[in-house]
Amino acid sequence: MLTTELHTERLHLRKMKVSDSPSLFKVWSDPEVTEFMNIDCFTDESQAKDMIKFLDEFSLENKAIRFSIIEMESNEIIGSCGFNSLDFENEKAEIGYDIARAFWGRGYASEAISALLDYAFSTLKLNRIEGKVEPENVNSVKVLQKLNFMFEGTLRRYERVNGKFININMYSKLITD
Image 1 (cartoon, rainbow, N blue to C red):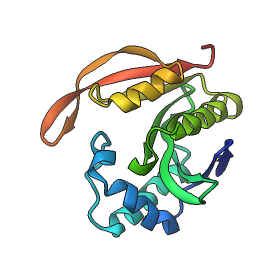
Image 2: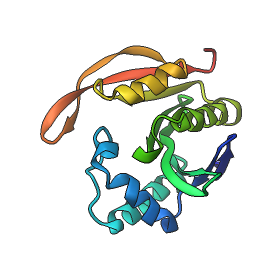
Image 3: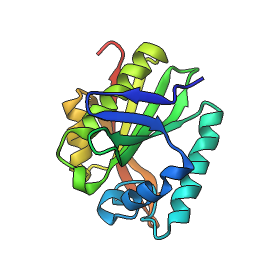
Image 4: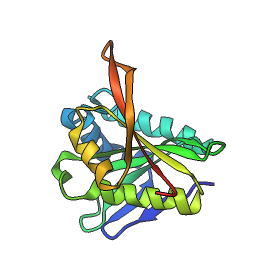
């Protein structure tokens, strides 16, 4: 069973709930936030509700889990993070994260990911955490570099976005790093 809450100095990470949809819609409807996400910019709050329900189904199967990121000082949902895919057989997971633009540059993404890493390595006993990032997503690259993820290479023409194939850079962090 996966945990439903994690805490850091400034953040409370709580498993997403449908009631988070108004706040997460604000994040996921910002084209600058969703520019490098594998979703289209949301135009209606119902899309956020559907996304949360979709992610919850994977969580029930222990294949993924997504947390709402709550800034404790304001008690405001400022984004989301989690494991996009959990592979317990191979002891690995892929992380994903997004932060509302108003909160960029404050270290919240790296703080949230640090909590995920600690949970993954100490509690879930995973061996490897992966981050797949579009090369142009310089802010995300900086976050992974700050957390000492290793650049492993470029997955050429790895995903189709808006009808064309794009490259994805693969980063990883091992329990032994």
